[in-house]
Image (cartoon, rainbow over all chains, first blue to last red):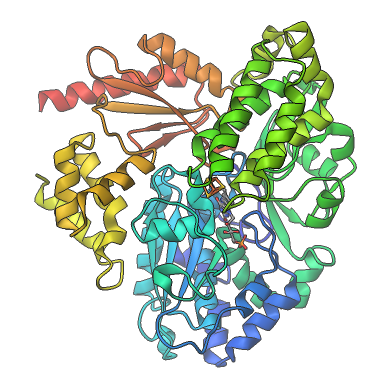
Length: 439
Length: 166
Ligand SMILES: Cc1cc2nc3c(=O)[nH]c(=O)nc-3n(C[C@H](O)[C@H](O)[C@H](O)COP(=O)(O)O)c2cc1C
Ligand code: SF4
Ligand code: FES
């Protein structure tokens, strides 16, 4: 039993028994790296291809990858770093785990190509602490690549050298934020840094650094093999390529589905076996828990890409699609998320530290039937006091769910406050969230 | 304080970082120490600090910041259950309730025989496999029905007895 349901590019033809170097090579792996080194590509050419591909960061923010890479001062003397963000902890997201365990070499090749393009000689992959077994496998894959001459000194006789290491996280969501992640690699508490300076000028150990998500790096070999333009055409304009969607919640077949950007949500829902038990769809969080929730009717009209979801008032985020059916109490769902952000705030900015506590406590009391009529306004006010006043985007991540849940499901919140109970009976909620494992 | 094997593992971690950046191995060193001792006492933290040439308070800060470190003793098997929203929609809370009932303890508690500690966890990046649990920070178990939870507890008990006999 696996969460890999449909692979069309990164996850194509790979799995529990085909993650090794020889399998990857049989799928055409390391051809892009061979070609770049043999033909002695000027590094700028890689950056140009990535720009042409319209590849946008797969970690959540969707920043154009080619543009980010062009910020690296490649002529700058001394050590430069590429860092991979595999600290996948955004609730709903479980794609990087499948990439790392089923196709780890795509990440290694992608990082090596990135290092070549940006003149970096060292890299780290920061892996989420809870997936220890995946971390062990990644270390094995690094050893395979090193033994085969794809990593280390003088790669494939080209004169280019790159060393790669894995760093294991240990249970702090905030380390997914790129500067917190760098602090963490440096052996400190994972507290985000003020930006600017950005990592491209002041990154790991104060050196120029580029950080990308696992899926972003894993896309690079495919992108270079097919060419930037062809990669772009896989998706839609400004939304190039394939994307892995992690579908969780109330569906019959939760799992990862790799699809072209621009695929209708309705199609993904169908692939995922539809809503569990034939129940009615109520709401979807389309891009990981930090992105605004959308009601079923709005979501069913969306295509899965950065632009369509932005237009609908949400975000593609990390591509984590959390499906909720009619048995879900939206107040309770929000309460759980608010608790998470409160727990995971690193505490260094007052608006976030205090604000996330307020959000949780107020949603909690509404859920328990102890809410007051002014509480919805209070929640709104707290979010506006957080947003835009914090060092990192966790402040927004905690606020957007609160705003969107109340905005779209106000009647459920009012029912809790006025009637002191839930619109969805407790037994219905319990039955709807039963353990549902396929035979 | 730590075995030769643990120290060798820590040295391998230190070697991943540039010269003079030993501190980068602090998370790994604490993890390895915790794997050997079960939890992180003041003495262990001071030992790691000395080994990495760091001020003890800096190591302590790291140990308290990351949730998977235990600064108090835990049972032989620490079981962490994910109850975050995506898991909760697919049985995460039911699985947690079942474990609480079977073990007779709540979150943050340890069974009187010192065998099991139950912890509530946040998203483990495996939501499509709900319910998800993690044993001793290392072994992940997926799609845990009540039956599978029961047999896991059984096998952990057996494993512990086995170790006890040796
Ligand atoms: C609170 C918070 C958590 C984040 N968690 C992750 C994460 O788990 N994985 C990830 O790739 N990016 C995460 N990000 C985004 C990173 O800061 C960064 O934008 C990303 O790694 C850049 O890579 P990309 O451009 O390839 O997406 C997070 C950001 C914030 C504010
Ligand atoms: S916004 Fe929150 S998580 Fe981010 S730096 Fe400030 S306190 Fe820490
Ligand atoms: S919510 Fe449980 S693993 Fe993600």
